Amino acid sequence: MAVTNQPGRYEPSDFQTGLCDFCDDCGTCLYGLFCYTCLGCSIASDMDECCMCGHGMPIRSVYRTRYNIRGSMCKDFIAAAFCPMCATCQLKRDIDRRKEQGIF
Image (cartoon, rainbow, N blue to C red; front, side):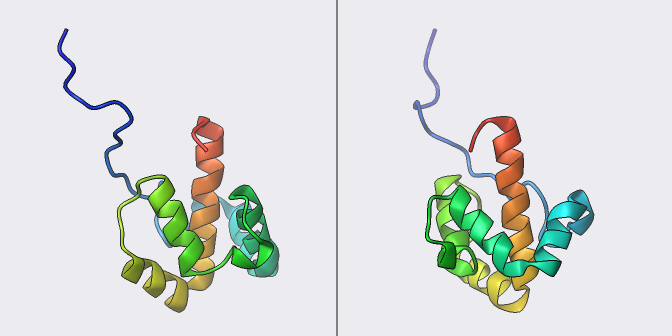
């Protein structure tokens, strides 16, 4: 049998939910709405980072790189700058889904 793919190579993917898919997880949305700082700390904790690192472009870029998610630092900056709560909730939803799938 011939090997056609190199081991450990992952095809790029997308985030598992869209930036504005609030209804996919209302609990995370409400968590971000009422305690945005706590949500950021939860993300940082999930990624073994300092609590102050849970928001913004850097954590989003690190996560995208770790899981080979399509995008760019520019797109991460735009999402985090112009819709920070949406970007943070999207990141938390993706982390939670990857945990459920056993790939986080």
